[in-house]
Length: 313
Image (cartoon, rainbow, N blue to C red; front, side):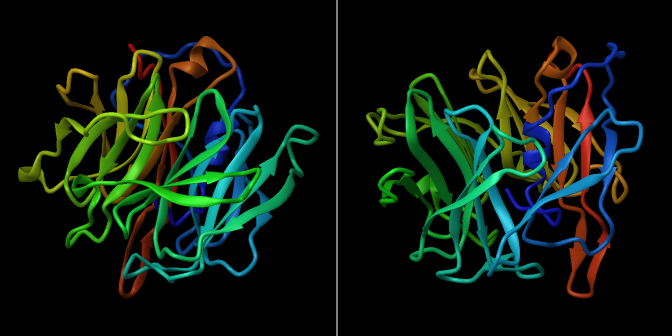
C-alpha cells in the first residue's frame, strides 16, 4: 500500500457506524478528498457518515515522510503501522528509515497511546501488513524491495525474514510483493512487479508449509497493477488496482472489475481497501483509499477515500 494521504486505511478500519441501506452501485462514492500535495507522516481518522466529514490528525510520526502499511492486531482497537522516508516521485524509500509502531485506541478513539515497537534497518520499502489469527504477538510485513516477508514479534521486538519467493520480486515496477492478508491457514499476497495474486499455507509463526499457489494474474493488456486488498468472510479478495479500479477475485481465481473510477477525479491510483464494520450495511461497504495523481512537477490530483456501497451483493 502506498498513499499520498498517509495511512488512510486506519480511518477505514475504525469505521463503526450505522446508516440506512442504499441501492447497489458500480460507481465509487467519494467520502473525503485530500488537498493536492498532501503527503505527510500522519495517521488520520475519518467518520464517513458525519454531517461535516473531515480528516482528523491522530498522530504525526517523527523522522519520517510517509506511512506505508497498517493492520489491526489480534487485540481489537490496537493497530500496527509502518513509517519511513519516501521520495514521492520515484516511489523509493530510504534504506534504514523504516520502523513499526503501535497505536492503542482502547482508552480513547481520538488520542491513542503510541509506542514504537522496532526499527527494521535492513530494508528500504516496507509495504503491506497483516496479522496471524491466534498469534497475537506476530506481525507480517511485506518488503516490496527485497521481495520478502518479515515476521516481527511485538513482544520481543525481534524481526526476521520468513518467506522470500521469486513471485515476490520487484521488476521495473519497483514494487514486488505489495498487499498481504491471512485467511484460515493461508497467507495471501499481491505482487505488483510479477502481476500475481497468490497464496501460501503458513504455520502460526508465519513460516511457509507448502509452495506458492498462483490464484490470478493481472490483465497485462490493460496496463493495470495490483496493490493492496481486502478479503470478505468467503475469502474473496477485493484488490485495489492501478490506475483506476477494484478487482474482485474469488478463491477460484476468476477475476472481474467490481468498480472503475473516472480519471483523474475518481479512484485515481487506488492503494488499499477495507470493509466497514458495526452494522450489516457497513460490513458490505468497501472503503478504498486512492493516492491521487502526481508526477515530477508535483501532485495534480489529491488523494481520496471512496466507498463502494453493497460491494458484497
